[in-house]
Length: 155
Image (cartoon, rainbow, N blue to C red; front, side, top):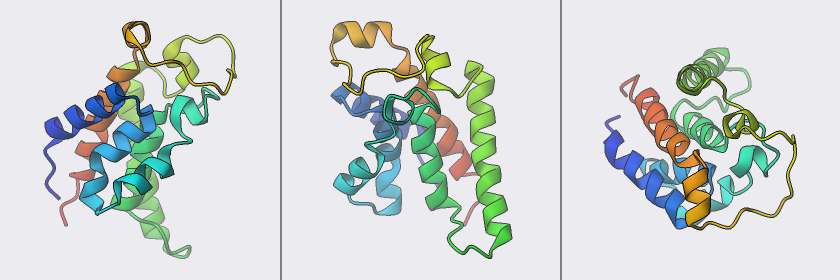
């Protein structure tokens, strides 16, 4: 698999700046690689923003990355231990890389949010939001990390 990672990073950032959540931005930047319908891709990832529906758990950019890894290294047969191992190993490598760059994979820690849970109402996407939130950087870095991981094994 050959991927232009720089192009995918730019696409992920553009999607985020259009107002898509962190998970949608990363996942949809690569959806065409797997011939996924863009609307379906946006729907599949719509609940993962804000660390899973603004619960501030695992970073949504990583959740989108993990979904991509399920497509790249599928483990759809419950009895295929080798496939599961490969899939889980790829998820762990991506998480470890992200953690090494940012110190954590947990949304609330990345954002330094004190409350564990926030209102379900999404933040308005405006100049103030983009200026104060580091999420765009997480989206770009996650898009890079997952792209590198997806190219690790050639078909």
